[in-house]
Every structure is written in structure tokens, then in C-alpha cells.
Image (tube, rainbow over all chains, first blue to last red; front, side, top):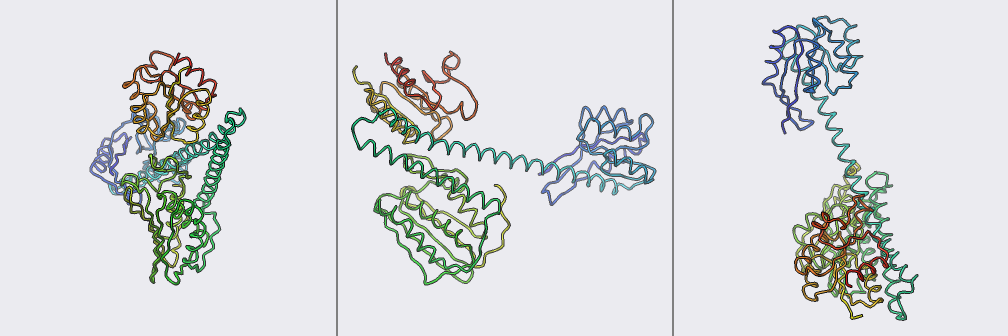
Length: 384
Length: 128
């Protein structure tokens, strides 16, 4: 990515202006840390008055400003710019290298100082420093703004997701209140069981949200110990069985004798519970779920395969985002927080592992999680 | 009153059920759909006398697209759009001016949550 920064050179000596222009015209500054390359467009001013006018019109990024000028001095120009809180970064040029001038100029907001006579190299170095400062500042602002937007979007969708079950339950209560259900006892059963289902969904959303927040904030107490993954899988299978049995879905596991890794047991539980719950939820009646665990010296592999509705490639590509729920006729009556896989992904990343999915519409999906046996110390993930 | 058929479309199965129960209680026959696509099929097959559509289904404007489709196929069929847009985004619109009606293909736009009496009154008016 190449950007262009504008540089206004203000000096009363024509030789100086020409020299500065020549030094910068073909100069390209590369900033590996900011992943950007910068070129410079140079404009010229002969006096302080002209410089102020130019700043008004062009709002240059960098101003090379001579200290000693025929009309108003460089210092006064700097002062006026400071008053207007102009975004321009000033590099003061002076023939006097007195400490006092440097201090005064810096006090009034000059970014850097260049003492005459200087070589084209020195000029370029000063401009380079100014450009780096400007760009890193801008990048930081941009990132902060993006983070803010992501947070806003998250909260907006969260609000929507929390309102939906409330509206459903409220609607059912209103039906009861108006005695709109008549004499048929089955209608009452439906209304009550649907209300409970929606409330349970809301509870799950709130719990997932708390999990997610703790993971992101890095405040989750992590207790890394040697954990036998097979025991965690067995417990997770146990937990999902009642739900699976209701719909005639069989759950099989194919486990080695032991698969020990260094991990936080509760995090492994969250990963497996989410994957197994999905494998049952998005399965067909009388389908099956198979959990396979394999371990070698370096890593463990967990594969959760279902015989469910599957997904298209387009749906798969969106899958690990927050509040992503695949919406189509096959999923309309399936409830979920839309956070489960996002949580799985964040946790797996915390271990330096990976999660992938292979899916075929109407045939099923297989989620594969790979975790290193020795947890890599990963930094707490950022908010996105 | 001869039994009129109302199609209810919302991607939330519970909101559909709630409306269905209430509409049936006041004497309508109800057909339901949970997506834009399903609603088109149901409408083409059952030719309902009126449609009540949630604005935001799988896409943000699915309801508009569906209303547009229905009005083209069955210009005489009244369409009522339900929307939570005003309370969620602050954007306010209804279908009372000619200009709004020219792009919102609906006879009435109601803000969610809708009181059933309001919806019922609108249906009676449109089906009179």
C-alpha cells in the first residue's frame, strides 16, 4: 500500500526551497512496521504569511518551516497553527542551533528540529521521522475506530437476539392473560413448553456471552494441568445423550486409551459441549454423531461428525463469526445463541490450535479440532 | 362471515404461532411460512386473502422483497408489514403517503410489538 503525504516547504531562500523539493521528490520511505510505503508531494511557500494561507487551503501533512523569515517569523507561524489546532506536523529549520530556540519551538508544538546546513540525507531522515509519527498516530486512531464499530455492531445484534425470546415469551403470556387459548389443554402445553424453550435459549445466550467476554478480556481464570481428553469427551457425550435420545440420534465415540494434554479442563468442556450440541441440534432424526480422538506426540485431534443438514461452502465461510446463525428452512426451528462456534474458535486459538469444518448439504458436517499437547502460551485475543 | 385465509410470515416460529392462535380465534383460516422463499410457495399455492409479513427475516429487507413479489402476483391482496425497525434503528416510516406507498409495496406498516386488536382492525378494514 503506497500513500502520499504532502509536504509544505516554507523558506525565503529559493536555493533552500529547490534543494528541499529535490531531496523529497523521488524519495520513498518504507515503514515495515506499519506495512506501508510513503511518497511525498511537495509545495512551496516563500514567507510565513504565504505558509499560513497554504495550510488553510491544502492542509499539508508536514510543514518544513524556516525559523527566520522576512515577515512574520517561523515561531509566529507555529503559534498561529497551534491556535487553530491544525493537524500539520511542523519540522522547524534554523541556522541557530541555540538550545533556547529549540526549546521555544518545541514548546509551541514543533515536532522536530533541523539545523542548517543539513544534507539532503538529514532532511529526508527528519521528514521520515515526521511521516512515521503521523502514520502510526493515524493507524492507531483507525484501529480504535474499527474496534468501536465492531463493539457497536456486537451490541446492536446482541440487543436484537435478547429481544426475540422476550417478545416470544411475552406474546405467549398475553395469550394466557386474555384466555385466548380456549378449552384445548394441548394448546396450553404448547405455549408453556415453547416459553420454557425460549427462556432456556436466552439463558444459554447469556452464559455464552459471559464465557466470550471472559475469554476476550483475558480475565478467565485458567488452570492448566494434565487433562485426559478421553474423560472430557465421555462426560460431554453423557451430557448430550438425553437430547440425542429424544430424537433417536445415536452418539458413538472412538477413543484411544488415554489422550493427555496440558489444558484447562473447563475450556475443553466448553469446546466439546458446543461441538456435540451442534452435532445433535443440526442432525436429522435417527441420525448419528461420531466423536473420534487421536493423539500423537505433538498434538491431539478431535473430530465430531454428524449426519445432519450440512452446509454450503458459502455458509461454511461465515460460520465462526459472532451471532452467525445459518438461516434457512432447515434451521428455522433450531435455537442457538450464535456464539458457540465463535467461542470454540477463540478457545482453540488460545491453545495455538486449529478448528476446521468439512460439510456437505444434506449429508452432514465434520468439525475437527487440533490442539497441541503442550499448550502454547498465547496472548489474550483482542476484542475482534 | 365467510372464512378468509391470512398468510402469516415470520422467521420466529413462536411469533407465527402466537398470531396464528389469535387469528384462528377470531375466525380466520391461517397459513404460515418462515422464510421469503417458503412464503412465495405458500402464497402461490393457497392464494390467501391477506398477508401479514415480518420485515426482517433472513436478510434485512426480505419483507420488502416478499411484499413486492406478492403485490405483483396478487395486486388485490392486502399486505401488512410488521417491523421492529423504528424501535431498533430509529428509522421511521409508514405507508401512509403516496410517495412511501410507491416503494413500500404494503397497505399498512405496523410497529412491533403490535397489539392484536390493532392488527385485527386493520385486517377487517382491508378485507371489508
